[in-house]
Image (cartoon, rainbow, N blue to C red; front, side):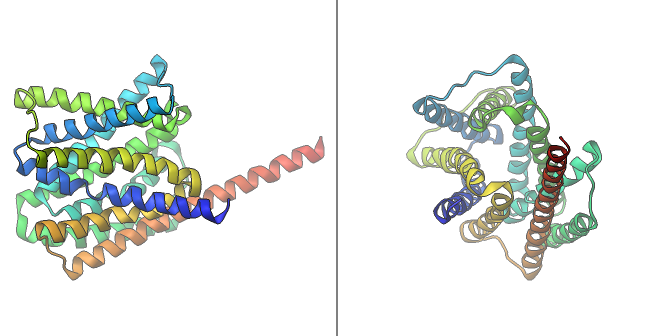
Length: 315
């Protein structure tokens, strides 16, 4: 791979994670404008699904999937939808930067899930990273817990649930029929399923769906649907194709950093030395797990290549 393609991949990865970091900003503006959590997510995923559909049609993409794949998409759609719902609840109760930083722990949840349910070995490095990440989460949460009471506990719990739900989604993408599906098609169906699910939730819990009015509200809807959802997912795929999932995951650290900066500038959220220490611990812990996983995959691939060479020599 030449340097130009690698540079493009890095730019795509930074664009993907940084645009996703604006999600709490648009979410809270829409909620302050009178929309419920279900309505915000309905517009986010619904409009994003329409944008992805238009992009796919323009690229002459086939959206056909079998019934077995449809069942898998529904399962993944539920996990992805619950991730978004729990994050929105977290944004409403704790600072957006802290919520995003806790959510960034999902690679650790994936590593633990793969070890528990698929018998993948978990190294001492991963265990050390988990301990460091927990210490980081405590540092991040300390300020909210000391000043927020029950609301802070609920917000931190919701952020932790988002880690579990998103970890489940990632594992599902790797270990189900979704692994053989086209990434763009899978993303479209997951977002469309989320839009339908949140629309139904709004009808049940709110008695209907508010029609967004006013150019400021529509700008927020387009902001949360296009850059933070559609564009973020498209650039994510492009980054993975050019620099691989490992490097893409490392640049994912831009997400909590962006959310933290936006929270401080737009909502006046506090930034203390404990917050800084917590964020550093989380980023270092997650980065070490990602790099350790990549090294294990390379070692496994090397052993497989050696085995294949030995078989060819015997034959």
